[in-house]
Image (cartoon, each protein chain N blue to C red):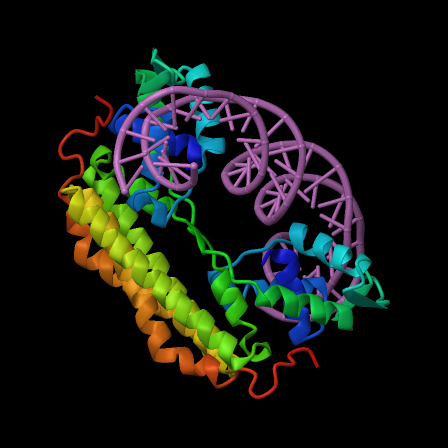
Length: 180
Length: 180
DNA sequence: TCTCGCATGTAACGTGTTACATGATTCC
DNA sequence: GGAATCATGTAACACGTTACATGCGAGA
């Protein structure tokens, strides 16, 4: 499921412009998938070329034409096909945890700040999810997705609070000279 | 913190060969970072060119020479520098959740199987982490990392079990015809 | 005035994966 | 006999990001 297919899927739920699709990627979806214009627009063009989308081009004053994409029946089939495949494994890259592996090389104050910051970030995300999902009168699926994010972030915050001492006890005490 | 820098960091903790570094990426680290030979070996070569690593080439019978890399003092400095930067945000791409967005397009049986599989996968990972961290007589940092993984996976399993009905109630009932 | 939202797109670049190439040894 | 471990590497490819290009209207 690359961005191209996800765009196709989103359009299966509701016709939209590239701009709107980008907005969708900034909603609850943003917590487990990212996409930029640089990948969305080319994807839409390619899907259209392939006959999986049609494009209704609406002229506008003083603005680029709005291009509303809809899925063709070939597109629906193609997407249903893609859905049948077993989803690939999650890809996670956490720079935070990568840095934590080197806790013993960091000055204690710096380490603590990093952990504080990370906890704050997760709290912000949780608050953000609350706003998103409360505001939209979300359906079951959206509720599920948002809840998933909250559950995982909450667990992370809890864990960090309960176990940060494991790292902080290892951090570099005293002088700031880290490399011997 | 790209793979190149992570290799440098790992070598800061302990000299190693490319092969051994790959093994490290298959340990607890694997739950939040991935790397293949195709990125590790070129990274090591480049770091060596740049004078951040030295390479002790040990001839072996009937096998490619073993190349044991160590960090130079320039390398240590460069890595400490990199550690000072605020770590970038986590990148997550969950195909599973992406597919779940389209729960209503999936036959109920298929959806349930996907969720079952996912729960099993997470359980396996938790068991795997237990083995890894129990076996190695891990230090504080390793304990922390493993615990983090367990905490997050456990939360995910719990959430899936408690809330799968939200999706399953939306899934396609009756006929298997998904695209209208 | 200045930023934000609307609206589209491209080109260069970075980063990493996959598959391939090679090959002995050891364990089952 | 076949798989796994040890051990290195490359080349082609896929995929996506970043920065740039354009430009008006509305609201603060």
